[in-house]
Amino acid sequence: MWGRMGRAAAVCAALGVLWWATVRLAWAGIGCEDWGCLVPAVGSVVVITLALLAGSAFALERVDVRPGRRVALVVAGVLVVFRLVGEALPSWTSSFAHAVTAGAACAGAGAVAAFGTEPRVARRWKVTTAVGVIALIPAALVVSWARFGA
Image (cartoon, rainbow, N blue to C red; front, side, top):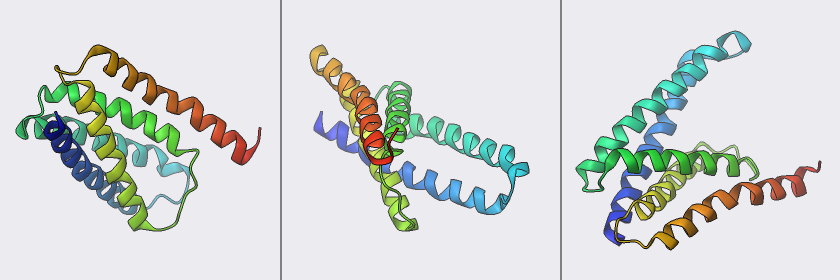
């Protein structure tokens, strides 16, 4: 189980950094300065995200984290929660910090997904993990409310 979680975390971390780099290149290539280019910019981010999600299913299968599609979908769900939670955290200007954060968030999501889809893990631990991930959202709202006010 630990090896499976480690492999999933490593693959997802690498794909997270790749996602960050390609999205950054796409935004730079589009050169979005006004609202008129927002649709192609967001569209390119969506295409990149979906392509890497599909690629992650294949990559997870290649490192013996099966079923890759199911794990990839759980990773995507956990990343949505992590993204929502990330809104409550302070931001920084360093590009390196963004790359590290993308890799770390994806690695964490990969490990959680591998744990949550492991057949040998008891159902109560899977439910506890899912509830814990979902509980991050109201916790982030409270932190955000405390930081920025109502």
